[in-house]
Amino acid sequence: MSYYDKYMKYKAKYLSIKGGERHECKPQNKYNDICIPNIKGQYKSKESCMNDCENKYINHHLIKANIKAETLKFYLFIKDIINNEKIDVFVKGGNVIGLYLLKMIYNKYKNNDKEFKDCFSKFLRLELIKDWDFASYTKNNKTIDDNYRDKLDKIAKKYKLVPRAKTFILYQTQRPIFIDGKALFEISVLDSDAYSKLEIPMTTMKVKVTEYNLKYIYMFAKSFLSYKVSGEEFDFDIIKKMIEKINVVVHPHKDGMYDPGNNFDKGGLSNDLVKFINDFVKGDKKLAQFLVIHIDDPFRLLYRLPEKNIPKTDNIKNFIKVELKESGMPTWLMDTDKISKLAKSFVRVLGQKLADLGDIDKVIQFMAGVKFNRTQLEYDTFTENSKDMLKLMFGPLVDKVGVEQVKALGETDKLIVFIKFLIRKQLFK
Image 1 (cartoon, rainbow, N blue to C red):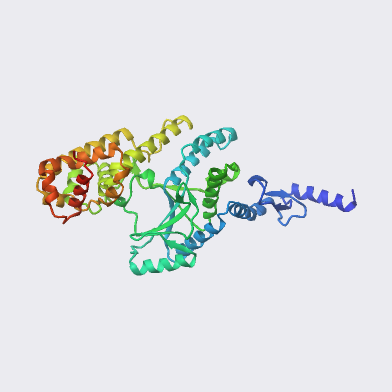
Image 2 (cartoon, rainbow, N blue to C red; image 1 turned 45 degrees about the vertical axis):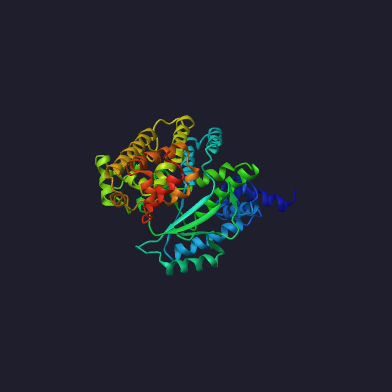
């Protein structure tokens, strides 16, 4: 060994003892090995190397997965509206439920790699993490009128995002990356987050997005996409690192339902219908808010609740009980037996109320504000259980008024249009 080589060897040893060993960045390596000792490395310590190389590591994997161009467009748009339009941006949807469970797995097994990986593999069977929906909200009562929508459209166009909806703002790339038939990334811009526009706490949990944590969201997306598309193994070290950085926000809630406090939101429902709901639940604000939300758009009550949200809740509860060995459940999970009985009882009592009103004009006034368009559009996907719920809601009224009499009514109201649609679908045989 030459004198120079000996010098460099002992210098490296001395710097290592002093905590100043030089490192070089290898972004193509596994996360824990991206910064390796090298006396000629450009970084004076592993810490300074990690600070820089982590970004290069994530960038390397986004390029490798062919999603770098897509993520960059969303990053620039999100950064612009956060900084210049003062709009809050969140990740919402099923993925956030997945992130919350990942955090529970991490908290339970972070010091036991074998248990963590085993539980993670069971978590994958829930298929919670798929496409990534960004939802953003204006602040200070800023209303999205036509002029402001035009402005947002121009900002989106600058970053090569295109609008995908007419009645609300939703942007995707021109040629989105798809997973399970849905765009991997999309972003909506909304006025507010009022309860009547939501569903249940479980489905509206969110993660606040900044221009700094967005890289972790993209790396999560890449990791699950690559696993699903090509079976690429997860790098659990970066997964654990990212879980630490994620903070899930949940609306005020109790027993799996929103707790509106003094912020009870009746949406566009008539005062008579809201009073009927309050009387039905004996003044329980949580249950009243739940029913207001679900009758505001009956699709939630008739289809989303029994066919999607209740089974998903039961699956999550079972996972927590069996795989995490926890008896206590997160407070954002509802009692599915109680809610199922509540929904069926409410629909039955409401159906009888509509029949008791008798006069069709009174029924129209009573049901003012209820939106039937999504129920009508999605009717052909309904199960027999959902159709039975519809029969309970409108069958007694149709029996009392008579099918032919209903057919003879002019289509002056959306309720009449909807009931005639149900008659054409031969729901009331």
